[in-house]
Length: 107
Image (cartoon, rainbow, N blue to C red; front, side, top):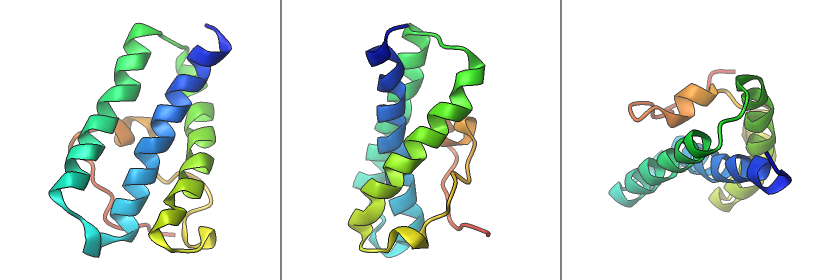
């Protein structure tokens, strides 16, 4: 797998994680458009991984890399970066699970 192929799932996952963080930390702004956007973003990393299988051992590293990018992007919520968890509180599987909606972060 080439460098671009390795980076693609991280990029897709970062967008999804940023949306999930915004969903969690801005409950007053939740709307159907957010729900639809998250659903769409959930399909993209999964589709890419089906077309370009990578070792399962690479998924935690991809999640860690993507979460750092997601926190930067979630700054659009107006919250300080320090308001977000220091590490991704969800598993790779949870992030792609259609029924998973983060409502709170327990530290």
